[in-house]
Length: 420
Ligand SMILES: NC(=O)c1ccc[n+]([C@@H]2O[C@H](COP(=O)([O-])OP(=O)(O)OC[C@H]3O[C@@H](n4cnc5c(N)ncnc54)[C@H](O)[C@@H]3O)[C@@H](O)[C@H]2O)c1
Image 1: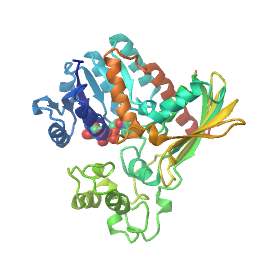
Image 2: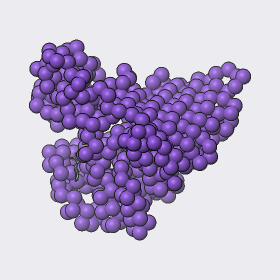
Image 3: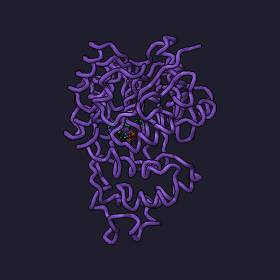
């Protein structure tokens, strides 16, 4: 029988337990969650039951948890500013790590983590989940096999979706850079990682522009309230918490435990009353024009790679639906990965267009187009020696530097920064 790897999860939230914990629980022949660590004891209680972890293996103090190695791997899925500190503690006691992105927004921390990894030797796989999603894997295969000739330029669009922008970057965890990483890293370190992966080269320079243009007091209608449930626009403003959470949950079939509704309340299963209570009193019921946010709502990054490939990335909160659109321009054709429509289009010059449906590629039922499932199953193969580690901490840090310098550029009027 193949080895079953034990996993300790630090940060029992949307990613730690809802995404990875549940996948580990499903993949019983590969993984067993045996420890949890979270500062919130209600989460420990909820997920110890859901994932069948004994309460004596649940820790609400990270120092106590990291005092010794308690499992084969450690999943670090706390919020952005905790990642490097906890990853170094985990490496010191001998863990291999599945580390949530972004690693950090600080160049010194990147170097510190790399040094610790070289010293203690543990493997660190950063959760660039899209690398493991079938549509993105297929795109890499097509590009690498020369389908469109030599790649010259890439144009990437990250369509955040208006309600996701409001949920995460206006009302939620990633709204303010004093507590978290800038949005270009929080949302787009996946894109930056993919761009260097597809360009097949390291990025040499970046420049960026972007702003918070809409979600501020100046744009609040004069007669609107500070909280959605008492506002006259409660049913007409598309950003209204009632429209996003309560109406959205109903439209999506009142699922018992779906994101983002399960962020608004701890109730499990979800109920109408619990969601209403969450938006009545909690942060997710605030008017989007009355929050303590400074995250941008749109940003554009221009990049040059060492092999001459150029790329641009547009991140915008102002889209009605999600789904990335990546266009690749080569010397003998173009290729478009369009998640919004659900296709890859291959247009070789002077030939008929070929359309590949993403429905035939994606793993059903798992988020990030099958990327969450893909990273967890690939990690198993990597840990058991059946596959090499698909990407290194060094490569992940390279793409983080692109984001760190893009943000520096944005704050300095779009100045171009050399990365190396
Ligand atoms: N890979 C992806 O595509 C992807 C998608 C979304 C979020 N993320 C990243 O995943 C991370 C977690 O996001 P989330 O949505 O799960 O957030 P979350 O708020 O749902 O979960 C974070 C958890 O960490 C706990 N926590 C806080 N401080 C702690 C500490 N010192 N020790 C232990 N636990 C602590 C919180 O109580 C919470 O339960 C973030 O860094 C985010 O950027 C990655």
